[in-house]
Image (cartoon, rainbow, N blue to C red):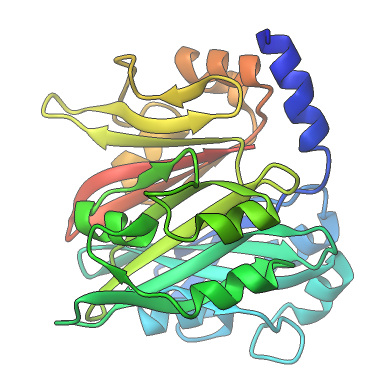
Length: 321
């Protein structure tokens, strides 16, 4: 199959709305609050307008509570809860949000918020896994699964040892891990994943100021994709970033070619330099290697999430649509 034939096939498969409808980056404003730095809204102009007029105090709303709690939060009630923008979310068809605080050492640099919507064909998963201090297994803290109820039941009844499955391998390596093929033996829930159409995944360690270990996993289906391309960039001794792992629906497995970026270069390099998640909705303006690969694969946006180990940068996790 040629590249163009693959692209047309993927475009057909992914013609529906993506699993993640809205992505936001909230940053400290210097006055014990959070303001919006950037966002991807997928045409939800009114929800974007409300977001840009909103500020969160420490502990207020979903971003503020993620900051105060120091750990990722899954919120499945955006109307009858502490969520401040409930009316706007309901009007936009958004029903669930996941907030991920980004800490560099003990300092919060940002809160990344991912919104999903209710859909009869909405398949995929965003999961938060946690291991208490001294525990030998990792269990599900919470997650959102769209219509994949059976897969959710399985997740709530399975634990992972260090090095086992996507959560366990991410826990062991302490860097993002890409599973390009969610089948046995690496992915322990592969049968249920295949039943609902989930095919790819990425695990991201979440550094927090709370005890224990947290891992964020995002599991993608072609029909309602979280991403059509996942990448892992890691810092090198010479100060550059190198693409070390990834998968693209068009290009296949990534990481074999010695692709590098300078720290501070493009959205990915900016996330690495600042410790703040970065968003790009104009991939043609990114560094040549990123712009070229994105054009070939028909991609239009990216999200770059810096992953810290204590105060140092361990990697940048990147996903594209």
